[in-house]
Amino acid sequence: GIGKKNASSKKVQRAKFSAVTKQSIENAMRSLGEPDVNQARAVDARQEIDLKIGVAFTRFQTNHFRGKFDGLDSKVVSFGPCQTPTLGFAVERQLEIARFVAEPFWGVEIRCELGDGDDDVDDVPSSQTRSELKKESKAAHRPSIHWRRARVFDKAIASMYRDLIAGTNGTNGVGTTNDSNAAAGTDHGTTRATVTDCTTTATKNPPPPGLNTVDLLKSASAGMNMGAHHAMQVAERLYIAGFISYPRTESSAFPDGFNFVESLTQCRKHPEIGESMVARMLGEAVITGSNRTATTGTFTTTGPPRFRKPRGGVDHGDHPPITPTCCATCPDDVGGIDAWRLYDFVARRFVAACSSDLVTSVRKAVLDVRGEQFDVSGSETLEKGWTEAISWRAPTDVPLREMRVGEVIHVQSVELTEGTTSPPGSLTESDLISKMEKHGIGTDASIPTHINNIEKRRYVTIESNPRRVLPTVLGQTLVNGYLAVDRDLVLPTTRQKLEQQLDLVARGEA
Image (cartoon, rainbow, N blue to C red):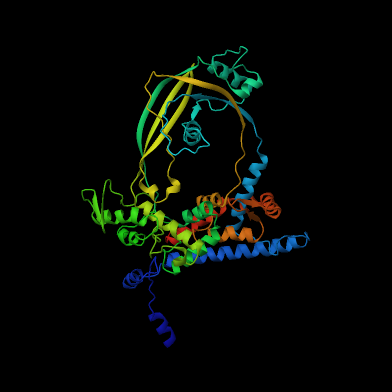
C-alpha cells in the first residue's frame, strides 16, 4: 500500500538541452517538461522489433553457414533490418558495375581565338619565356567550348560532322576523315565561328543551411577521409567536452530565437576566419539594419553586410543544427588532430550559414560554325560571401570577354575526339549515407553503427581516400541468397514502411 502510494506520487520531468554549457543546462532546468510517452513507445517498439528479427535470423543463418563452409570469414553471420539493406546498396552498385558494357563515342572539339586577354606576368623565371608561363597559368582557366550534340555513337557520322564544321567536305588534305588526320585534328584557315548569342547575368548562390548529423558524416567521410563511425565518436567527445552542440540532429534549420551572436562569438578567435570575417559579422549581427557600416574592436569595415540569418533547411523539432559552443584555436585545445578537423569544420560551416550569398558573374555565348552550335561560358566571382569561410567550395574564375552578336571569331582547329562511356563509380561511404537517409534506413544516430557493423562482419571492406565501400564474397553471397528467398529481406522499402508506422506511433496516431 505505502509502496504503491509513493510510486504513484512520483513526478518525472524531462530537461531538454542541446549543448553542455552552463547557460543551456540552467535554461533546461528552468523549463522542465513532461516526457513524451508516444515517442518513448516508438523507441521501445523499434528496439523490440529489431532485436527479435535480428536475433532470430542471425542465429539461424550463422548455424546454417557454419555447417556448410569451413572457411567462413566471420564468426557471426548477422542479419539486421537496417544492416542488411545497407549491405544491399553496396552489392547493388557492384552488380551495376559488373553488368556495365562500355560503348565508344565520338565528338567534335574546336579551338577558337576568344581573345580573353593576356595579363602581364611579373617575375618570370629565367628558364621560361613569358609566353610559356602565360600558357601554363591560363590553361586551367580557359573557357571550355562544348558541341551541342555532345556525343555521337557512330564514327562515320561524327567524322562527317567534323568535315562539315572544318569545311573540308571529305576531300584529301587537312581535315579529311582518315585516322591520322582525325587524331591530329584540322587547322583550316577559312573556318570561322559567328557569335549568335551572348548574355551576362549575376548569379546569387545562397549559403548552405545549418549542419545536421548526416551532412557532418558525409563531409567527414568525403572531405576528411574520416569514417562515419569514427567521426561520430569524435563528435560525441567534442559535445561532452562542451565544444559543439548535440551532434545527433536531423534539423538543418535554426529555431526561432536562436542566439546567433553567442555562437558566432565562439568563432571570434578562429585562426583563419576570426579576424577577417567573424569580427565583421559580429558587428553587423548586433547593428542590425545599420547603414552597412560595422565597427568591431579596433577597426571599422564597410560594404555589403556579411551577417545574414540562415535560410533554408528543415526544422524537425529535435535539436538545433550543430554549432560551436566553446572557443578553440588549435588541436591541443580539443584533444587531437581529428577532433580539431571536425571542430574546425563545424565552426566554418556555421559561419558560412550565417554569411551572405556568393555572387558570380556568368557569361554564356553561343557560337555557330557552318550550322553547328557550340556553347562557351565563363564566370568571375563578384562577392565571395559564404565561400570565405569554406573556401574549398569557392568556384574557380574562368574569365570570358564580352562578345557581340554577329562577331566573327577565327577557329584555330577542329578535332574529332573519341571516348568510351564509363560505368557508375564505386559506392563511396558518403554516397551510402545519402542512400540510407533517402530510404529511411536507420536514424541520424544509428547510420554510422550500421555501416560499421557490415564492415566489422566482413560483409564489405572500406578503402581509404576515397572511402569506397566494396562488398566481399560473403556479403554478395548473402544478398544474392536473400533476393532468391524473398526480395523484401534486402530491399530498403521494407524498412521504410516500418519507419513510417513507427512515426505514427511517435505522433500518437497508432
